[in-house]
Image 1 (cartoon, rainbow, N blue to C red):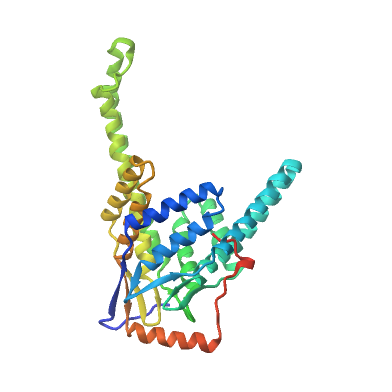
Image 2: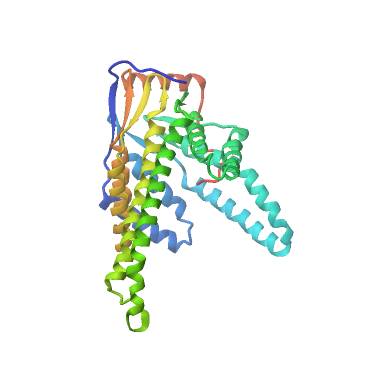
Length: 356
């Protein structure tokens, strides 16, 4: 449903105060303890990670909260491991049971995804009001089973539609307290993103088809060398590798464009009555962050992972804002009254949650 905003809504920017040095201490303890406890501590590690990023994300002078109990997450993971053990034993002794387990997993996947989203939403809060997520099994099955099958049957042509319906599913089933979110984007906006990306890929393919044949005669001249092999630092070999060194970053740019454009579109079309998000991520900046993060993590053998996570979180959040027609304090106060009046309390749904 389309909504309109006043001519000059109040802009409330998100702020991120996380620091790589602080987060590194949390991250390294999480890694070490998770290894020493054979993964048991990973539930506490997840909660510590989320609480750090939530508590360092600020909107209008207040930060977010992550309220999940790590014991709940651990129980869910142990349950998942139990199911995996049953599957392994059953397949070992009864080989024909494997297709049954696979079909059962596919059938149960939408339910698992909904419960996980519900768990994360209901354990996230802002100013003592929890977020929410609700969806029927049929709707989730359509998104996570039906549309992927459609993508396969159409040889990928329906993928932009799947991308649109996936984000529509996430937003339209989410809420803040008693207030539901709406998503007013259209499928054609996602098709336009992928058409542009596909056009860039075609141009890149054309460039490769022109450059590589021109270099082949240079490489074939290696036959005239003793042994017919290219020296490791020969000009011919460098000429052959040059297109690859250029093409790989260009592929990364295209992938970054798709990711950035879909994020901006999803946020810019998510709203409630009187409030709308505004995302202003830039492809060039996102590409540089992803590329430099990749190089830094690779060269540091993973020790700069916390630094990389802090960088991308800061850029994403500091280019996100909430546009609101009314004072946020008044909106929150009204929402608190509605939640109290309806008697809704969002409990941790362990009994049906898998905790991921």
